Amino acid sequence: MAKRRGGFGRGGGGGGMPNMGGMMKQIQKMQDDMRLAQEALADETVEVSVGGGAVTVVITGHQRIQSITLNKDMIDTEDEEWVTDLQDMLVAAMNQAVEQSQMMAAERMEEISGGLGNIPGLGDLLGGM
Image (cartoon, rainbow, N blue to C red; front, side, top):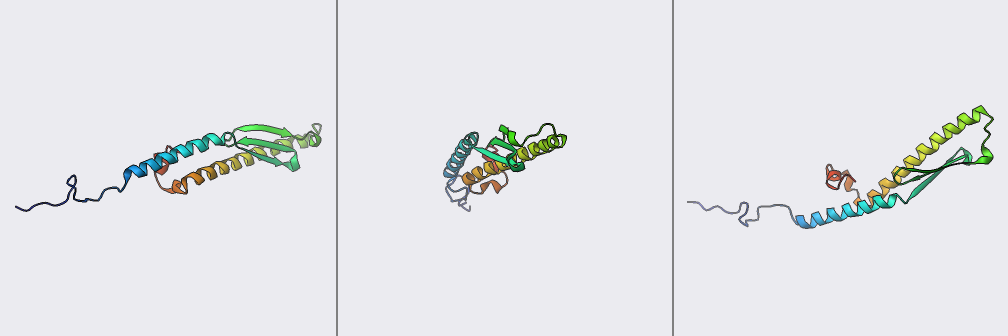
């Protein structure tokens, strides 16, 4: 009768994942770091001005509009065309603020993940951050 060598559960060095516990600790640390970074983004802001300073929008790292400031020296409410231009500038400022806030958030997450976010399925493993 032939003897079997190796195999699973027999200490035969059948491969497996090296240092899985260490890897899980690293993933847990990354999750914690990303959670803290997400919380910190609430306190970070981006400020965007358009129309030569006529409209300024401040937005948080969570893409929440914090303030919209209109330069009173540049506003002429009697002019219909100016009102239309002002509306367009508000939209432009808000869109730019959201884009910059999203870039800021992505940079913070990239600093933590070190580019690991490009690995398929890793985002789910890290809690979708």
